[in-house]
Image (cartoon, rainbow, N blue to C red; front, side, top):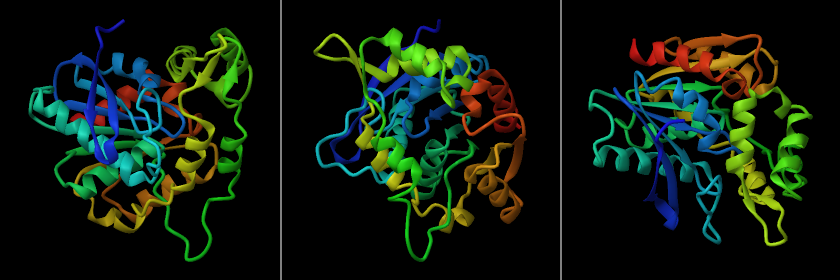
Length: 285
């Protein structure tokens, strides 16, 4: 295991962002998680990257160990602020060799990294996103009644023990697709002890649902202004994030496409070492 250090940094809305320094050497690399997950899910990826990068990861607001203050919106610009705050904090304490700052983002994390760069150009020199949620905003309607939102609100948030969680999640799709190490990290760090001796989700069903409800974050309409190099990975599962990943690369020829026909939207947690290798080559090119 890495000699990881845990830090906290103040973001907007009074959010105290928890972030993790995995050590390493080379340019700074920030790992940004997907909705409902947390930064520690990507420990296996971090371990595969520390020979070439100074690696940090964060828990965005309402996820992992970063609490959501009462009344704070789950609009994704807040997640972008969390990313930017952690980048600034890491630079302030001298992490990285100063040559560049890179971002990895999975799903929501990809959008958050892009928004952070759009809001403050120079935050990242390059970004590599696995199916970043960068969708056009429809003229009417939205995602409030989508199956993702409804499913999140119905999610079971309490179990008798962490062992019960591991058994349940490891036996049912889609989490059964995850690399065993990534699944264990998700479970271990994604639950907190409950008063009755059981465990409960750190990212509450309501917080996850509201995060999905804000997924049309306006990044698509601004994507042409992105100055950082951008690599976009897309799976072969045929779902909308994969289709949109291909579309973004077709619409913006300067973006680099990374197809993974054998993976799903959970690709970075299915094949963390493979994803780390491909991402590292792109970022250091």
